[in-house]
Length: 96
Figure 1 (spheres, rainbow, N blue to C red):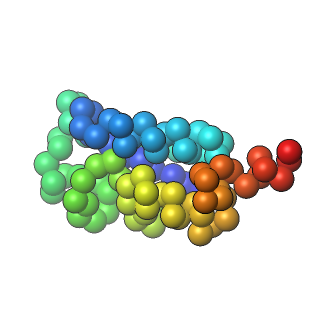
Figure 2 (figure 1 turned 135 degrees about the vertical axis):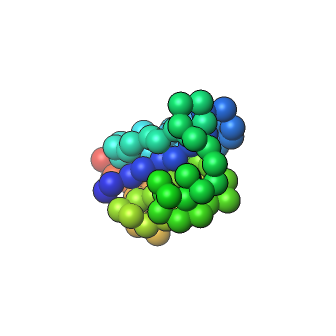
Figure 3 (figure 1 turned 90 degrees about the horizontal axis):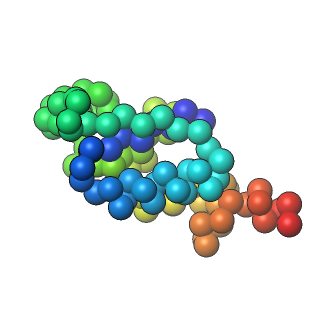
């Protein structure tokens, strides 16, 4: 899986942290792109980098597919059978 997480350097840090924690818990590798202090945070620039307009950050893209924010990521991972409804990775449950 190619996972990109787009965040703003000082906005919605709680949501960003929840995304990072979930991906780490699932042991999924991801890259982070930060907008704001070092890179432009204009809506046009972000849309160009992400590949389409986004309403807010953080924003997750997996294998080129726009997923969305934290709750969209949870739904995506459940649909891909990676986590259960409690947010626990299914592979960890099978190994217990």
